[in-house]
Length: 212
Length: 43
Image (tube, rainbow over all chains, first blue to last red):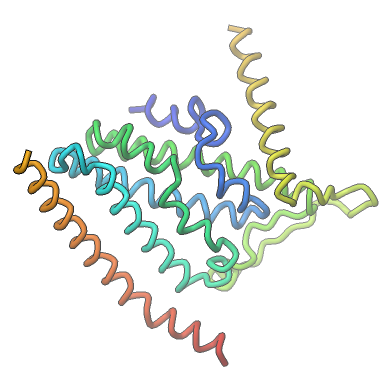
């Protein structure tokens, strides 16, 4: 159980190790707030789909497995979309097409087909939480890297402040001629940041392996 | 083979129906809030 949880968070991190579901990760990681809301949406869909798929796994004939799973995932994504549209319309506008695109996120479908359809309910829930948290850690790390170096701010609550009543946008150090590096906020910067962070994490992993 | 296909159709229909019911309930719950926001944007 513990291994299943840690596998998704560290060993098989969906963003830095498996490189799954990168489309929203690259597009949405411009601010920490967007990254948190996106990862919470993915976590909800992953948890719901793993739970439902593991519950009905014995009822679904093998040849219609994937259409049924997509039906379930699409329902959960539409629920997420409606809730975001109703309660955080600004974030719904910013996240835009990337919320409906969770339906075809290979992480969600991969866990449903590859894990939940073979395992029990409890293990599937633990797996979903592990991979959801792994996705959250990855996207938030990338967003912190890009926002701090590219915009010199950390936005934890800006559009969400209408619901929570707290506005949390911080500027870390005074701007200079060369800092912040605007390139990191652009789509090209997303690829560069992801490559750099993946490389650094791989280097740390290799060093640890050598020490053992 | 025919029996398997029939079972597939029945399972897909039942799950689809349950998913639609769930979606309809969420839609009805969030509808007033979405309409309120849309009215605010239009004004």
